[in-house]
Amino acid sequence: MTDRGPSDAQTPHDPNPYAPDSRADLHDGHAESRPFTPYENVPGAAAPPPPMTGPQPTLPYGPGTYGPGTQGTSSPYGQEPYGTGAFGVAQPPAGPPPAPPGTGGPSSNGGGRGRGPLWIALIAILALVAGVVGGVIGVVATRDSTSSSSTDVVAAGSPSARVTTQPPAKPGSVQDVAARTLPAVVSILVTVGRESGSGSGVVLNSDGTILTNNHVVSAGGSTPAQEVLVSFSDGTVSKARVIGTDPTSDIAVIKTEKTGLTPIPIGTSDNLSVGQDVIAIGSPLGLEGTVTTGIISALNRPVSTSGADGSTESVIDAIQTDAAINPGNSGGALVNASGALIGINTAIATLGASEGSSGSIGLGFAIPIDQAMRVANQLIKGEKVTRASLGVNVRPSTDATQPGALVASVVRGGSAAQAGIPEGALITAVDDRKIPSSEALVASIRSHAPGDTVKITYTDRGRQQTATVKLGSS
Image (cartoon, rainbow, N blue to C red; front, top):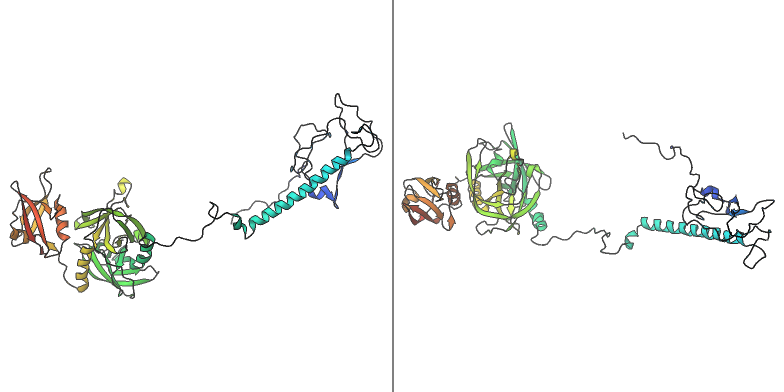
């Protein structure tokens, strides 16, 4: 309970002796009277009239007749002028004061009846009328400011005008893509023994087939999750089962009990461009339906992901993006400006908690959709997952001035052996793609399908050579 202070009605206070009380100023519509104090003598002026005898005249006044007095200032009336403050302090007339009626005081025509009380009364009446008019204007202004038509006073387009409509989504805008894509992106919660984890996924078919990462459904372990729950954009939740996983490519497929889902449009990743606009959608830190934007920062980026024990689980020929990706985005969608799926968000680079940042630093990575769908289709069909193979074992170059992948051994009967690539050769390119490291060679070969033909550039004993190789499978 919040303590309250005493209300105004409960707080004792003394009335301001200088402020007029509207209940005391007017009685039955007539002005209250106060005793009149004669002027003091003014040097050089005519002598004041003799003191009055008998009843004293009265000075009418009303609200707003005089401004507030200044403490310590001598008043021509022998007291502090006061009033509501609506008008300035009235100045005394020059010369001697007007004589009270019947005293024969000086006048403008050199004699006759004085007119002092008359003009003072007129000022009082005018001030009273002005106060009433001001009060009426104030009431009207206040009433207008609280009426339902007050917005009519504000000019259209002015800074104060309230705009309640939202601009429509333009085709291809983030707003448009998000509205169309969000129903096809789900949040996944898994339980493996005593471990639990969460991630994202994308709907491939209306029958409930969903594509995600292997490390999402295994919760960082080596086996698929025992319990899988899928949360949809409409707020419903459904159980799911794991159809298949491939740790090497970090791809998994699950299927929910809910059907009639909205599938995501499948794009392609073989014609992407650096600088292209992209949108990432997923459930970072469990925040379902989060949309972030960015560009493709790089293509064919070799990225090694590590397991819980620190071992290398997969090497991805990744799409790099600066769209914000955080834990929980894994398995979510990376789409282009048309809303087509071009990648599966899977990894981020961080500085680590010791460096003060374990979340997104603008370095996110996604599995190209062409590679992901090749594996996913095999899992859906229940087939063994196969991947392209060059038939060599490689290690980093020993010479820093000559980057490449050094062939440590050649598999007998493999693709490299058939093409005549010898042990000890330094592979420097695959087709037109430069190979600066052994990981880059692995990522490049895995981006192809078994049976694809590639051109391998290598150096052997200081001589550069090329070989055309038909990739095998493993």
